Amino acid sequence: MSVKKIAILFSGSGSNMEAIIRKVHGKKAGQNRIEVALLICNKKDAYGIKRAKNLGFETTIIEHSKYASRDDFD
Image (spheres, rainbow, N blue to C red):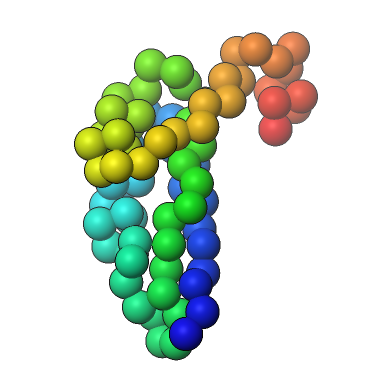
């Protein structure tokens, strides 16, 4: 069995992020086990960061507002 690591990007309340974690983290998919390995948020005050912490996950924050343009951020 191999482990497939996934990242989740979010920017708001994190309800979809939480649903994804609850649905797939640590679960089997065929011959693979899914692991949520990275959470990234572009807003330092997003409520989803608190949701992630409550689930035992840290969030990497990359603020889009610290870049000259959205193209630079992307």
